[in-house]
Length: 162
Image 1 (cartoon, rainbow, N blue to C red):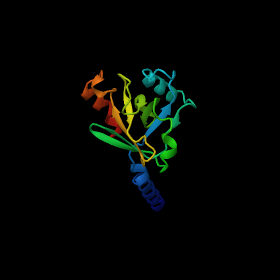
Image 2 (tube, one colour; image 1 turned 120 degrees about the horizontal axis):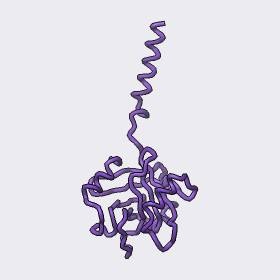
Image 3 (cartoon, rainbow, N blue to C red; image 1 turned 90 degrees about the vertical axis):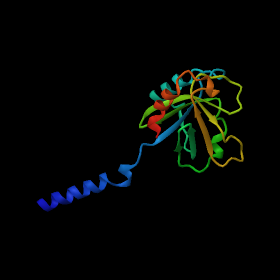
Image 4 (tube, rainbow, N blue to C red; image 1 turned 135 degrees about the horizontal axis):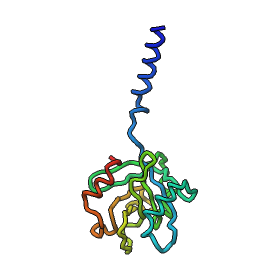
């Protein structure tokens, strides 16, 4: 009896200490069409609401991508085919989540956009056909100096991504 209990503990310990169990939280990027094609300013609330309601309009980005911000970066996706997913990525809403919780949401723009947005923005850096993978810069507003939150608040908000 004691031997079977020790075997049980060994199995439980192996499972708990396995690489799968020790894996860090996975970040996921969701793309959501804006509520109105002309307005991206309501994207933070719209994208977060769509995810919370499990809307079929929200699609998960599965292509390999990297999201960078001032003090960090996070790798996303597992699919090596970035080319098929680039079309239609900009002028959309996004939600970046960790463990089912939306960390930040906002709008996706091309880096040369003329828009002024005081909401979080993913600037799509690799939007040309020849670019091999998706790369985004995550900034608190577009342009970045138009942010309405402090740098410290922004870094605190992004802390779960590290």
